[in-house]
Image 1 (cartoon, helix red, strand yellow):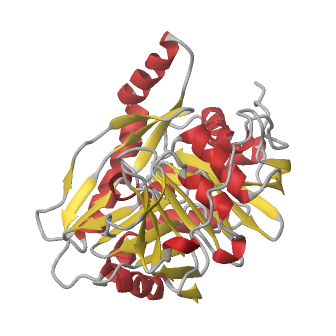
Image 2: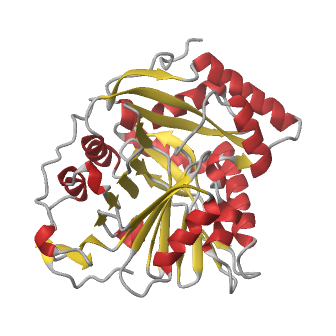
Length: 410
């Protein structure tokens, strides 16, 4: 892990997202903001900028090789990789930055403490302000519900068991990516929130979901499947209880957990794969979600490339069987997913952590995109699945809704 004995340059009251606002875009900053101790590297906020090396147009295997450099390094080092769901990967390697401790923000690595910028004010937008204007969707309600019907027919035919059907919202940014990120952090308190600016794409992610983590030869995958909205008063507790007891949600969740057990079982020691906890319900400010933790001991000689070949993309965003589900996704969805439902991986000496890129704003070419979707099973209700996509877009939209996203009638 990164050392925690560097010079203190700012008090712990400085927010991680303030550093994103303080650093110029050409510095290509990476900011990791764990919402709790469950988040990045056990709840460690990390900032890095001015990468010593970058690469783009990579395969998943080549990106894994770049990540291995920091994972196996003896000196402080951090490598980040974005693996889009569909498209080439990109990486950056940093040799210094800041790390938040109880005493304050400490320098790590080769960063010169005298060159640390002053943390900038990065006030989030109002709680009902959308992060984009002129938003349109690539699938309206009718098209999405037709897609749900098609998935249910495929399940009846035995082609898939569960499939994650998604759509994309596109609009003009209502504020800077940095301030949008601060707004997402305030609205979601996401455990795996991250901001990364590259020369081409900027990612402002409020992901609640861990993909894979590695520490001391132990690999963990934490799939999320099952959602309910938050509510006022006693109804809020009822929503959590309903999710925990839902046969439909539990059945869908089991299918994805079994897929993840099989995926990591390909690279883990026989008999070492366990699931604990199972069916845990986690609260966010806007929804409840069901999560499990699947762990296993990596076999000797397994590389990070081997692990990613076995597990990427995460089964919670594809469906099962994975290959069949991905083929059907390509046929049903109206646009490419890009970074959405891919993964952001970060390696430091001896550890790897990563998020599933959901609840993520992707800035490129003057527009911002946001993906949203959910798992479809034989018991899915098309209208309720549509409502779930609207709920998952609420941190992005807040005060607005995309054309075609109004509540369906009848």
